[in-house]
Image 1 (cartoon, one colour):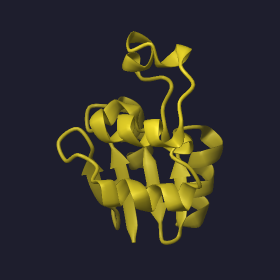
Image 2: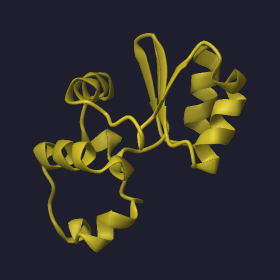
Image 3: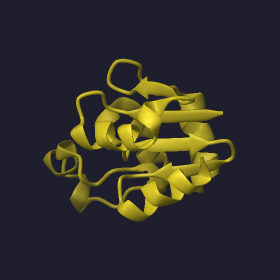
Length: 115
């Protein structure tokens, strides 16, 4: 399976998809329009090792909800990602049994190499 979880209106996500042959051979899921299911998140968590690895602390709501002042558990990370799409670190690229989370140059280079 080759899949990319992204936001269609995110310039960074679009640039990365373009770098990955315009997303050819990938199933693209715009997480704003097509929410992440609990099963999909569970699959990502299994591959990543934790919900925390999938959680974005850059989301605007992270501070506005006061989450930066709380100690969050794995259950909390799961809940917030399922409730609000912006809490998923983007993009999440799945290539067979490997997962690549986020937009750092190192992560994207590793994803390109895996193709």
